Length: 490
Ligand SMILES: [Zn+2]
Image 1 (spheres, rainbow, N blue to C red):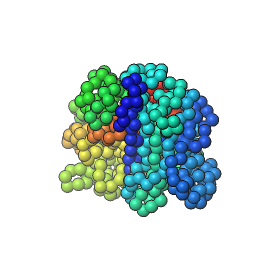
Image 2: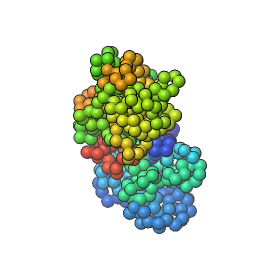
Image 3: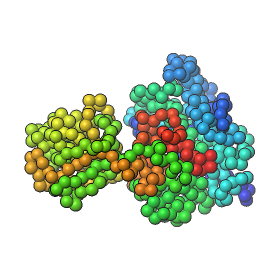
């Protein structure tokens, strides 16, 4: 951190926020390009790599997915330019946006990797035309708002971005899962670089708080423009109105923080779909009756209405009374789940294996209870032969349902489970229709607070993980990234 330039115009140099990606989980950074984009904003990518490295890597490459570069370095630059062009066509600024970019070795293992990291190079307060006094803005946005280049050093990047040059190319760095350098989103089993760039670019443009998400401390006692829109949806307090301790607590309150910006909230109904829901009823449900939050599965049909309903019946195939369904079901278990909804436990094998086993036994649907405490989460995996819907519930909710199933016959429980949609509730939104932010109960530094919830449906570009259903769109009706930047002042 550096001292203020003057009493009124304040600047702080920031380290880029690092983002860790595990397998399909990615958090990367944003970059610009060396050629100007034709659009409402010009984005310049400043190539920071040394000769022969990164963007200058001379390794020959075959054209792929509309990327006509003939070397690895050239294809990387072309992908950057494509992402820059998308943002350039979306944003408006009279000041060219410079992104300092490099491909360098970053942390990785055989099963996880940092895809990249990006963020504002400098943040500024009290620049000419600043909408709010004593408030931090990222350099690119400050320049747009000021109508002049707000930078400490002429030509310095507004955004810094680094990407992992070894990804997928070495046995110790997610082998086989390298960046897809095509421009057509046809990434197959690879990681779509343009999507990652769009995500990281958004961080650098301002999709991040500069306030410490662990301690709640502001930089030099001043809030980020971001903090005016972060709302504790239980207390009605904004981050700018909270103490450090209140901010830190809200950052780890699952479903506790919403984005209160008017442009995002107005767009939410056209972007987010109705939430998936597990409804429990029936004569024997007792106090377990009601609606349960669920995580969706990436396999099988998505939930829809009318719901798929049946008696909820547990699989029991372990000595401790749990049911893993990792092997073909025994005759008693098959009898129990046939024509019913199977309740199984997470663990030992993948979700797809469990679904295939209960489906083979004739189950109409599957409910997976988590095997450890935590927030609601989704289920990954893929198998086109799965035709029944599946959802995941928390361990605590699983215990509630199992208690209600204590008294049951071999074929009936009197507890009816319905897998459908809650049309009064949008996936990833709070009860007032505001999108939720990512606030897992275990803080994920740099990811918590500065991303959208993982519960959004369809998946959003600015979730902490890169999902395979993302497009290159950053605007409604598909995506809520640009509306948030507009709330900030773009
Ligand atoms: Zn991110």
